[in-house]
Length: 224
Image (tube, rainbow, N blue to C red; front, side, top):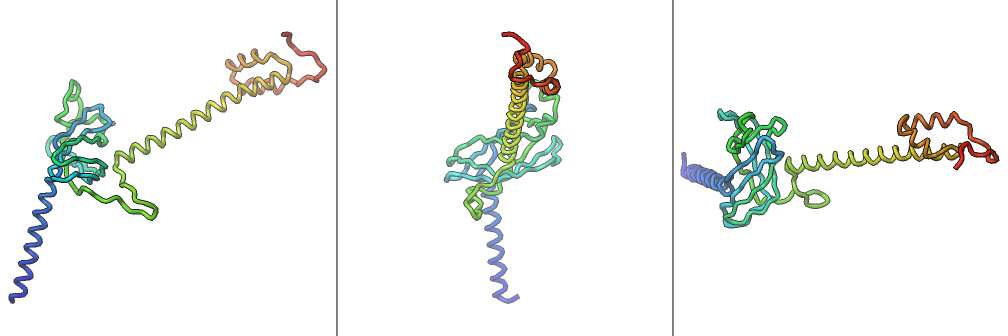
């Protein structure tokens, strides 16, 4: 091995060692202080501490989930828009792990926790102060699973509202139709509307269709 090759390998070794040290130090820039999740929580509460001397924003991290024997169960990636001052600790919410099965973090204990499955987690920092993802139109933030989940909830809630309003409109419209048809036949409008509560407006409309509409010169079938 000549002298040039030796210098090249030494430089490569120094770069690798420097990169590894920087990566290890970056893992300690933001650390998990605590986590809370009871069997009935929809969200888990994660406390993160900023060990740097600068404000931290836009944190990209992974949560690894383990059973109580240390076997990994799952992992989830998160991107949170949060601002943590230097040396300070801040709480953020993430979706509860296995909420439908009432899993709980083993350190979060209450009167009923012993009845459900406990788990442990490990916080892994991927990056922080991440720039927003650039698109052709504008800069938009990446969505975390929690934010995507909340958006889907609100979207579904909006659909239910539209369907509910449509149901109300159709229901009211059928009663109005009963009133109009009864009036056209010189019948007691209030009486037929009350009857439609028993037999449904559609049934009453069918019955009214079978009743001939009187001529304008004929007297009404009921007296005021």
